[in-house]
Image 1 (tube, helix red, strand yellow):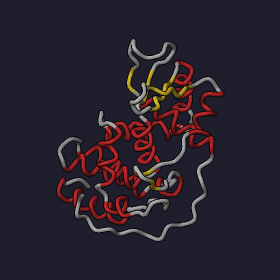
Image 2: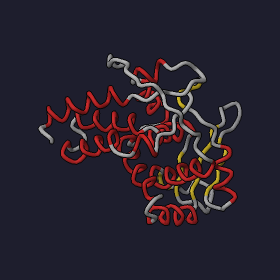
Image 3: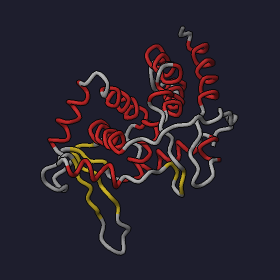
Image 4: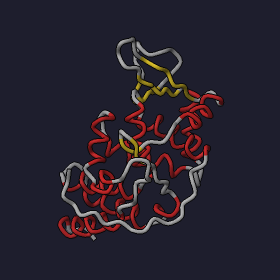
Amino acid sequence: MTDRPSLTVAEPDRPEATKNQHAIRVLVLLHTCGEPVTNADPAGFVKVIRSELRLQALDFWLRNPDYLADQVISKVADGELDATIYLPLARELLEGSEPILHWYPMPKWLRGAYEALDDSFSMLQSYGLAEVRRKGIPPQRYRNEFFLNSAGVSAAIELAADPVLSWYGQQAELVSLVAGSDKGGRLKERQYEQAEYAQTQMGLRIAPIAPVVKQRLAAQLMASGVN
């Protein structure tokens, strides 16, 4: 766990995300962060996210621009991302319209940030865009795998062309970049390194961390010589 100070702001009133918004987020995450299917997978699908833990972790960053900006800054500090390109993106995540328009906090449960996917995924399934399959043979633990088909790919491409909804795909690209190929457990470990996330009590919404991340950004901009 990092020793960064915990510094949060009072949480403003925030309406819950709608079922449609959640379904769109899941769709773009499957399209952008999913891996290609293999011959061992069910026929008729194109991409897959192989664990709910990974999907929940990706959704957390998509819904929390300040936590995503923190990851971008860390990647720059570690020399994995170009400061001249990605520090301005981190600044936009923190100072643009992101926190007002696209922040939808998640509650914390036993394995970190979690929100049930049943309703959103049932919508995607009803439109014939995606399916969830359970994998495992007792006594092994079952796990859910989330599949996107070609119709789902087409829908995600259409979203990317929409002036308003294209934000989802663009943000998911950044989520995919910071997540890399890490499995769900590792992504959750990275999120727990942030003190505010780790210290949130079970059942409460994970609070924003924008003030702390803005301090990190200012220091990294100075260190990198980026205006």
